[in-house]
Image (cartoon, rainbow, N blue to C red; front, side):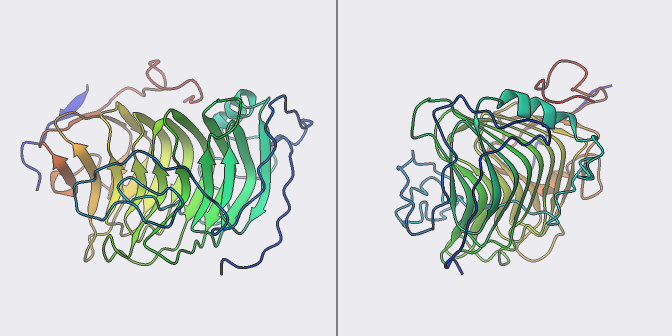
Amino acid sequence: MLRRAHLAHLAPIGSCVLVLTLSACGDDDPMTSSSSHTATSASTESSTTAPSTSSEEDGDGDGDGDGDGDGDTGDGDTGDGDTGDGDGDTGDGDGDGDGDAPSADAWIEAHFADAAKLTGDFTSRTKVETPQLVCDATGTTAKYAFDVREEAQPDQREVGFIDVTIFDLSSDDAYGSGIITYDEGMTVYLSRVTIEPDWPLWEGYDTTNKDGIVLDGATAIYGEDVSIRSVNADAAIDNKAQTSQFVRLLVEGPAHRSLRYWRPGPHYLVESQIDNPQTAGAGTLVWISDCDNFELEVYDSTFDGSPTIPAERIDCGQGSDPDIEYLDVDPRTSGDMHEMFSP
């Protein structure tokens, strides 16, 4: 039986040596790339210049845009540090080479078979020109570990991440994140991604407006076995995608707001765990821009141990009645979710 909840009252970036290689993620596949793109060389914080993006109003007076000339406009929530345990072993992707990688891996690899591949260990802000697949990679010590852009032909606004770990990020101002998108129409695919940015504890928008993932301009995000841990600052995911689907999303930490939803959806959480200890300055599990125009489908997930999201842990920018449906049937079996997912 489907349960529907309606809420009437809601309470040093320094010198570094980088080795960039173009390769296929699969162990047995030769590198193939019919795309005109090559793997973009990693750039330092000071050398990256981004185009400006459309402004978002987040309604909480956070001082949108960090003014550092890198195009981080919007609600200022352009810091997304995907927290993880540093070993990329989320979900069933144990990385032990025995061929039991999650089903999403194979779909993403096939989808990006003709795109450039980016792999390696990166210690500065790394621009990812789409279409591109980032795989077997780590990112650390940057303000933004992976900065996703569409600036050159072909105009194919898609990016994939497989077996990527982001940790110990560093920012001299109020902003930062593990993965950030800017361009309208961007689609993001994630499998076995762990993010642990180690941002300082939330103080306010003028100092700690930092996240795990920021999706400015995105159309969709699809993620399987994504872990965002030690979410100390603003949000694990600042989600401005029109739709989002996650299977086995793990979010842990005393974030200001664990998940932020800006668009109506529908959005999906399947076999996911969202935990946020109610400490000083934290405790909101889900923030929704417009609660009267919002749809979230939940299957077999927990929120601080509860199978439903406690009403007092939901915060609405406006409105008061979000459509949150708790499903009895796995949406991966009903044709409602993206084809990269399988039960």
